[in-house]
Length: 220
Image (cartoon, rainbow, N blue to C red):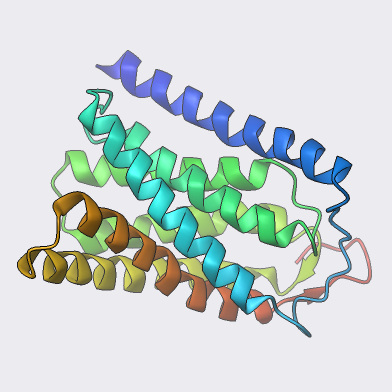
């Protein structure tokens, strides 16, 4: 059991690292290169940001659920939550690579941070504790990367904490409402997670806009 838990964590981190590496090579050859110009505070890409989170949330929810269906879920679901984190992390990276030099560890940080949820799920802890822990974990891990290129990057930590707590709570409520309306459970599941991504993107975007491009190598 412990070995399976550890193995799924390692596999998830590897996937989170290798997929952006592959995509970066493909997108660079296609002419879609990141420029690192740091224009987020002036012309934030809200449409792409929100759409990316919605798609990432829906895809992550679908893949996470699929793991359980085929019997690959572990106690606490570390693989399930890590897969969702991978989807969200890659979605963010695809948007931010046009403005920042983040590297593949951005998605790895998301995968690791989201896997924290498995601990609370295994302990049958109330949902708000899990959402808050995930937000704090992801925020801190990604802040270590973001601080290299952005001033006031610390805003990313509370944005994640608040964003995922609010989004998770609203997404759960939406999912329950869809089920009560007799929407197919798989459809309700994917739509609920897509909404989680969308709701979180609004708070995360707000936090990211509080940062500014660095003009020196000092970390903040």
